[in-house]
Amino acid sequence: MNRQNVFSRIWKFYFEGFRNMNGWGKQVWIVILLKLFVMFFVLKLFFFPNFLKTNFDTDEQRSEHVLENLTNTK
Image 1 (cartoon, rainbow, N blue to C red):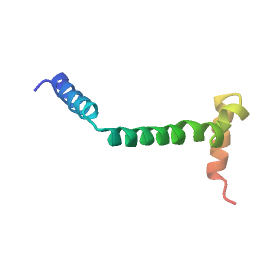
Image 2: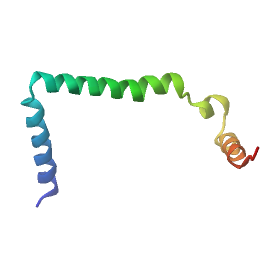
Image 3: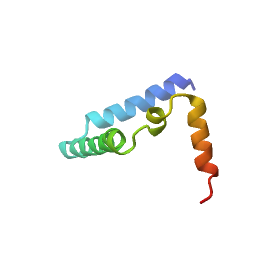
Image 4: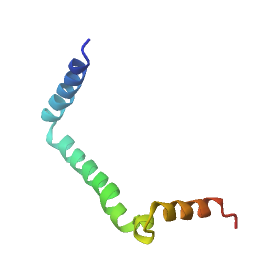
């Protein structure tokens, strides 16, 4: 079996399923996609800033900071 043929068949399977979906199913998928967008994009922007890129200039400084925090036993 051709690998491209398998991917093509899988794509057609899902495409036909979504195309023939009723209104209720489409609304559920919209809610799921909105929740994923909020979880991965909005929350990352506000609650998980890139601390290492903003506070350290070089890769060496970043690696030293991470090593100190991983090996620090308080």
